[in-house]
Every structure is written in C-alpha cells, then in structure tokens.
Image 1 (cartoon, rainbow, N blue to C red):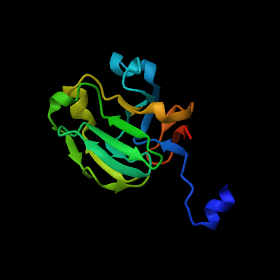
Image 2: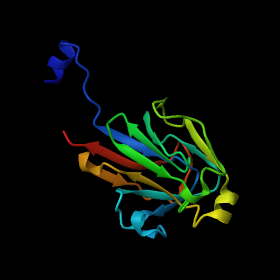
Image 3: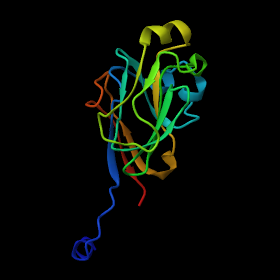
Length: 168
C-alpha cells in the first residue's frame, strides 16, 4: 500500500506526534493541580507546569485555533489534528488580560518553539489562585495511544512531555 501511495504521489498522513514543553518550569501531574476541573481531567488528559519564566511557546507544529480575549488561554490544533489547550495559571480569567501579551492570533501557523504569549508571573501570583499552567489534550477521543513522560523539569520548546498516536 505504501508503495502505491508513493507511486501515485499521495502523502502519507502523519499519525504520531510529540508535545514538548510550552513553558519552562517544574512539571506537575495533572492530578496535583489545585483545581478539580483539571485535576479530575474533566477537560481532558495532559500535564501541568509551574512556570519559572513568563513565556509560552508552541508545543507542536500546528495552527492557533482559539485565543481567549483575556489572553490567559490558547488553543492549538496540531498537525495530527490533536487539540491542545494551554491555560496559564488558575482563575486567571478574572485578570481580564492584565499581565498577558498575545504574540499570535487565531489562524496563525506555528512551529515548535514559536512564542505565543508572555505573562507576568508575579502579577499572577498576586491576583490569581495559582501560576500552575495546565496543558490539556481536549480531543483525546481521536487518540489510539498517549504516553506522558516522567520528567520533573521542563524547558520550553525542548523537553518532550507527551507522545501520541492517533486512531487510524
């Protein structure tokens, strides 16, 4: 089959992908996030990071599909169709965008490491519940396998955190 696809010039669809850290910081299991919506995986599986610096980069190659007006959360659709939500801090929606700066907009194509937004860690510590940042796969139903790496520290754009394979 693969030979025929090559013979007729059809591209094989990418089915496997790696999500790298969108933020530099300490990796925290989702179950330890101090918010039941994330800890109980109501929005999907993933990981969380306690940031040590205020820059979010793209964890995959893909497209920006959602950017909340309050700039605290961003949605990316990866090359394999996996949708990832990066939610900076907990209860940061109430900050109404204060301390956040958007660097991309909906429709932008991004590659691993593309800066997406910046945020003021100290301001979030002062005005929100937590700086812990969940990174969630929101359409996990399309995945055949998900493997979350056991790492304690993450460097943005470099540290592999999650691998997946989508269903055929």
